Length: 337
Image (tube, rainbow, N blue to C red):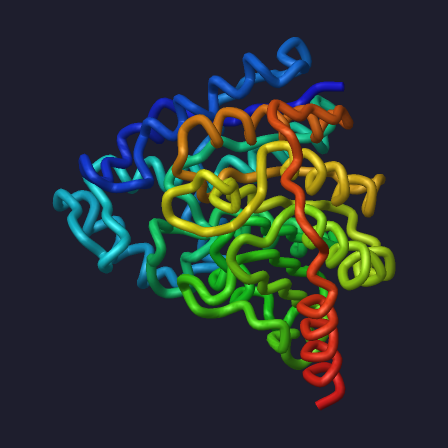
């Protein structure tokens, strides 16, 4: 089995400032994860090609992209209270948005079985007409839109602690993309309630699992088995895309979730088993503790190859059945309205 690992030196040139949590050093920690992944010999590192404006404009307004390019080339600065860009951010963004497209081309050519993309800037908060939440372009949505245009059915599984509001918004009315998000709630950006289920032909194809702070692996897995598994099995995706945000780790400084790197192994193996024939591409999203990033990347890389690697023990705790039942009931009411 060959696992692609896509990254590029230009990602370092996306300069967010000395005190920003989404720093270039995150990629150094992620690269260390290769060495402890137990599948180092199966990993093929590649430098992605940039996406074109036409490819990115499937999910972003051209007027926004034009304004972002000018902003970056004029030196950058602050886009919102959380999000910054520099003169190097435009090229980094094109390469991050192109990473999934490049990986998918290689996988369709039979060169690999799965891919992990260590990209910057991250993407799942970026909406059609603006940047937000550290994100400039929605990298995973760029690939999903391209796959849908080719007739594919796409499952997006987002286990970042922050809800992927941008990704949800872009496919909220689509029956070709099943968006599943497990996240801390309440937390930035304030979206991702269980009753958000899609609209029009997309009704039922958004599935949110809004967990309270300190939720651990047993509750995650129970909710996935009870709420998500039947939907995925009925959907039959041909591609699985993972928004791999490791800020659900219990050591992350920006969130309050209770997972460990071993839980990310279980989550990745779970989604692979739910759609065993689907091609799988994982995109780096959040995660701001360097040791947690290293271990979580290692366990996720191994899981992409079907190997259970647990650099630290799984999180433990009682299953919150009451909370899962409340999520189920909220979703059922929304679907029946």
